[in-house]
Length: 145
Image (cartoon, rainbow, N blue to C red; front, top):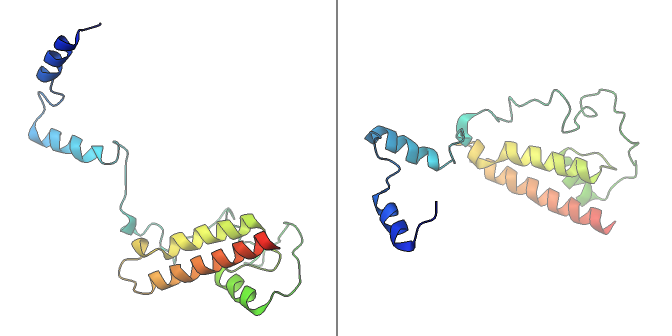
């Protein structure tokens, strides 16, 4: 249906999406608009608590740390310098780690240490800053080396 501009203006002035809805239905619709009508949960729900979080399918590559068989590529055994060793220890990485291991470990640790997920934990921000510092340092060292 094609309308001239005058008829479009008339149609739009009379149209009301919320016509026939109760105040409660209008309010619920407006609240759902803030998340595009998709389900949402608060960050502080505790489902990502670092103490209770597990990786049963080894998505973040922690089997080597738990003493299980590590069939990934052989790791380089060269000793890193003191600063690099400290940064690797912050992220729980072994010498010879890959870019993917660095990235996945950073993401998991940053998410678990984020202040929004740890309300009331004054040290969460400090832990997050240390994780970011280690990630930036190691990423820069990998791109140079």
